[in-house]
Amino acid sequence: MKQSEQWSSKLGFILASAGSAIGIGAIWKLPYVAGTSGGGAFFLLFILFTALIGLPLLLGEFVIGRSTQKEAIRSYQSLVPGTAWSYIGYLGVATSFILLSFYSVVGGWILQYLVYSVTGQLSGSADFGNLFNETIAQPYFAAGSQFAFMLLTILVVSRGVSSGIEKANKFMMPALFLIFIVIIVRSLTLENAMEGVAFFLQPDFSKLTSESVLAAMGQSFFSLSVGVSVMLTYASYLDKTQNLPKSAVSIVIMNIVISLLAGLAIFPAVFSIGMEPEAGPGLLFVILPSIFGQIPFGSLFMVLFLALFLFATLTSAFSMLEILVASLAKGRPEKRKKLSWIGGLLIFAAGIPAALSFGILGDVTLFGKNIFDAEDYLVSNILLPIGALLIALFIPWKLDKAMLKAELEKGAGSASAWFALWLYTLKFIVPIAIILVFLDVLGVI
Image (cartoon, rainbow, N blue to C red; front, side):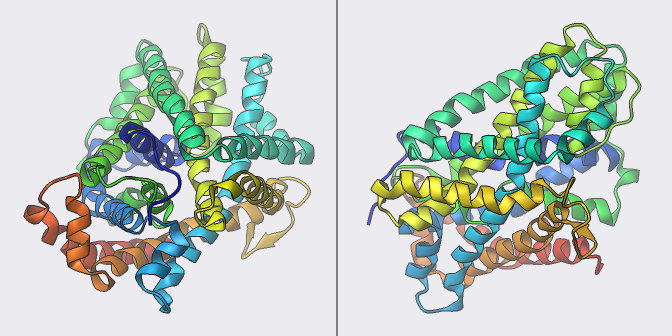
């Protein structure tokens, strides 16, 4: 049975899927980890592992989604009814719900800083460390900006797949690339810019350790939104003429290019004024305002950077809300708008404790972490690896090989040359890699 909603174009699907994969982690985490873990050597490992681990998983989710033409929960239920495997879809929906509940908090911070930047509050004389701490500690600002971010997400998703998500991504993704190019040109013209490029890309194999190898491996599947069945949900809106392998490769390439562009945009600017690079929120909310406050037209470039981060955060948020809405709607598009609002507001409500965990709920801890960090740890280090592992095992061990091969060949031609290699990779290499990363992040190895 065909989904009632469909992507209007192949490009729309690729841009939306790439938008889901390209989140703020690819911009503020991967370049820094590469720079401190061997530069170009780490980046080469990341590309290799993305091809060996991330790409097979991504293609697997595409195959399941398009073959069933159903959202996450019903996809697994229709393929293996009455078995424990059918709960993979529920795990994906639950993980996306928790993830968006605290991811939207960061989206709210970005919106708040965009207002600061436009109104001139991010001046070169400001104490950006204190400004950031004060902003996230104020309950009305924290919850209010999170609500504004969720409101934008709901408004897009409620309009549907082609009229909402696809249209938004067709604007946001090209804009994201264009903004990157503008910022890179400015960064590379700053004094000492080449030191930043060398930090990011100069290969230093002596810095490669077992820890950095595992980090590259983990980043390879975390960076593609695999493991939570959001890519499965997006693929369920495809017709049978789409070339799934080609689409998966295009999304992987776009994700790698964005990570490369992020490093080229950020580190030349960081090194130009002799600051120490870092990853995470401090980069966007403390380091970059300090830098752009000291260069000509810096306020303009800060606005562009914040817009870039906002687009990257929103395009990922669309997919996280979509998997919930699609699972609740169960192929009934007339219920989409109502369920988008219900689902989005529930996620906002669930995210309020995380939004307040840097202020009035700062003393509330779970396993020694505040609420925001505990949820982040749960999703990133436990739920995502488990979801990715289950999907990797499910496809080669539980699905009919003839069905898989036939689905891959629709719109793509013969898959005989590499089909066995793809299945072998999913059956053995990907699970072993995920287990190693899982044990590493838990501190077992």
